[in-house]
Structures are given as C-alpha cells and as structure tokens.
Image (cartoon, one colour):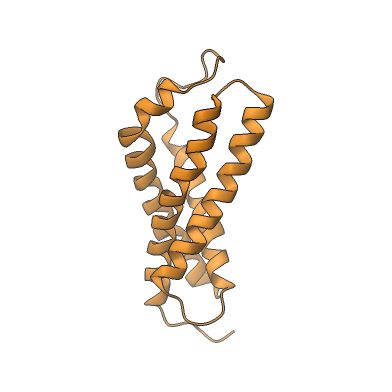
Length: 141
C-alpha cells in the first residue's frame, strides 16, 4: 500500500473513530463507565483532553489501515469491519486487563464490557477505512 492510501485511510478512519468513540463511550455508555469505575479516586479528568483523544484515534486508524493493507484479494467493507473489530478487541482486551491487574481504575464488569464495545467501535472504523480505500486506485510500487 502506498503512502497516500495509508495517509487517507488514517485520516478518514481517525475522524470516524474519534466521532464514534464519543457517541459510544461518552453519550451511550458514559453512565455505565462511571458506575463501574474502580476504587481509584480522581482518575477521570473534568474535561477530557480532546487533542490526546484525537491523536489516539489517528494512531488506531493507522493500525487498522496497515492491517487492511496486508489483506490478500479485494478490499471489502466486510473485511474492514472484521479487521477493525479484531484489532479493537485485542488492543483493548490487552489494555483493560493490564489495567485491571495492576490498578484500581475499573471493576471487572467494565474490564470485560469495554473490549466487547470496542468490537463495534473498531468495526465501524474499519468499515470506513475499507470503504475509502476500496474507492482509491492503488498506485504501482
């Protein structure tokens, strides 16, 4: 995959992941996350650092874009959903259980639910990346 496709996939995916992350984790499930916090005090910020969340979304999108770049055959939305969902689940399963094992920022319920919600979040991001990349003509290497 050429640099232009990686860049465009990362930008489109980053915007979609940022927006859907807000919708899923703040609006739809914000109360769930608050109710299932661990015993650590003062962990959530009063106002999240949006620039940091945006950087995380673009990094996540780059990972999914690179994962899609290594797929054989034609690029489909279904393949994007699958790669995005698997990447999201594995990343957050690792992070959540590492945090659960070493900190008190979340209870076990939240630790289990978070990577499951990430299947939806990552799948949507992967679909958007696959859609935009599927419409682009690959350049010869």
